[in-house]
Length: 493
Image 1 (cartoon, rainbow, N blue to C red):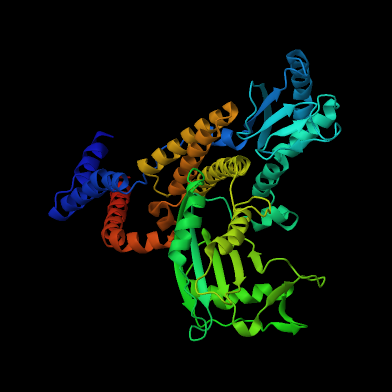
Image 2: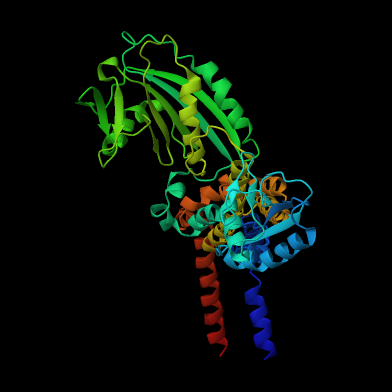
């Protein structure tokens, strides 16, 4: 046994330079090279807060809607109003819509004065009909306290228009609602920024010499409208004049006027759209098309043959077009054009159709509410999509900056939800916008997108030319050493 050990020791310690070099190379490659290579090529993945993200997916956002309640002290006692408020609370919770992601909490608060900012209910006997409610010019809901609690509750829910919010929130989870609800179908997707492009189209500049005056018109009427929405999103606008674009549909003459059928209106947009230069989903187009005098007066006919009162039409999630008559005019009257286009812009932002070009406090509240709720839901969806994407690609690099963006998104979601529960819609919307921006920034980070198109077989194409020339000779040499060791062992035996 001792002779075998001494013989084995002599054989394992190479005496030739070639065998010594083999062991040196093996030591460098296996003991030093492999760990260094493993460490330097290891994929860095910053730890993301998965548990809070999963919890947010199941969170129901509590949306508190403040409603001021006031009364005429000479007609109704404060005790009676307090009794009505107490009785209304459970009824309103029962009757409010119940989407999957949101809980609507209508907060009734007794006030000394009624101010519709955004909602106020006044109980008084000075109403035209005691069984009916009415809304004053300043937006206050007036009703008699003698009505049944169920009737009062139904009137308040209709006045607040919770169904509007319910439809838009439900559309996030159920795209099929777009086919059922015209308001949702018309509205642009809630975004953090919009670009409005106001275009005047002159089909024949040689004959139509009216002054477009578009820059002044946009500054006078469009900019103040956008300024009122600065908390909702970042709005920018551009103006342009397009020429030599004829109507794609030739108007038909009937009696003393020309008309275009409502079914053909989408075809009017195609030649205009190709010249607009807009390409993103956040672009809103407002087009003023100056009609050639040959087709004036021009009217729009509905599918049932009725003549529409306006020559403008809305293209859902795209914009609005006004077919404008400039006969006997030297300059376009933009008080007239924007009085038509701004109500349609309100529809594109998700509001119901109305003839008013102005935004009242209720309009602003509903637009802000829609934006805040949709941004919150989209932020949560984006974060969960990011986690699924990371799990599907194990070698994806997750940098610290992505983790910081995810942390910022979660933090803003939580602060927005807290503000919603307190009824502070402005603060809730600000944090919701920040949350969506951070969530989408993390999901679309260039370091992530680059790995989406990097298949595993490319790794082999990179590593094989590097390791095969070094590793193959070492393996062959080691096999020879093993064979020699076996031969020496067999000789001893």
